[in-house]
Amino acid sequence: MSQEENQQIKSSVINASDVAEYLAQHPDFFMQHKPLLEVMAVPHESGRAISLIERQTSLLRDRNQQLTVHLSDLIDTARHNDSQFEKTKRMVLSLLDSATLDDVAVALEESLCRDFYGDETSLVLFSDRPLNVNNLRILPRATAGVIEPLMTTNLPTCGQLQLIENRFLFEDAAVKVQSAAVIPLVKGETIGLLAIGSYDPYYFQSSQGTLFLSYVGEVLSRVASRIMHEVQV
Image 1 (cartoon, helix red, strand yellow):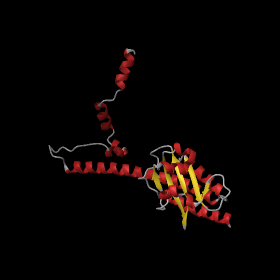
Image 2: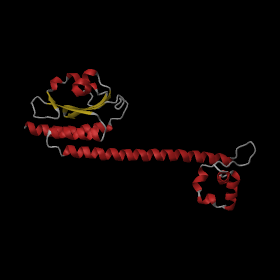
Image 3: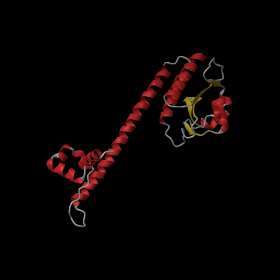
Image 4: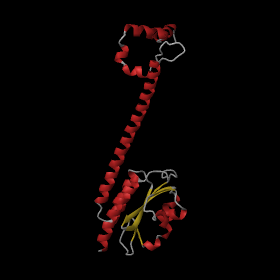
């Protein structure tokens, strides 16, 4: 680097004197850049004591920062809720358009695996009559003793299943499923189960909320019950 270039770089560095001179020449600078005042610390000369004005300013600045963070969190939550609503709406409309139980199973798999990032889905319905289906399992209620603990509360269960439950629900894919959400389908009585499996052992956890899963279960229970009644009549 030449001496001339080195001199140009040094001359381009802004120091405190340059800033002070600029502010002296532009006394209305902070009027035009008010957000800077919110992050600046300007102590008042009051000896060793902190002036009341300085203390109030500090508290207001901290409060403003807290409110900014809180507002950002609220905006992020609203965006997430909007996204969840759109995905849920698409799934519900697909279920309502289903004419057969196979249509129901396909709509669930497409939505839960594409929009909600599940890795496996399993739809099991109970019926003592054999039904012609391809994309789900129809079993007599009496054969479901293995998964009885998942149905007794009529509430969704999330977390890591027992090995025997995992195998019953996901069959060949059970070895890959590390966590799951299981939703009892209830319409007067338990008519089946919907299981959503993940290869991630922490994707579904027992501490997570189940409001969305309960809603899915309520919609699916009504749709599946209606179709089963129609094909059995």
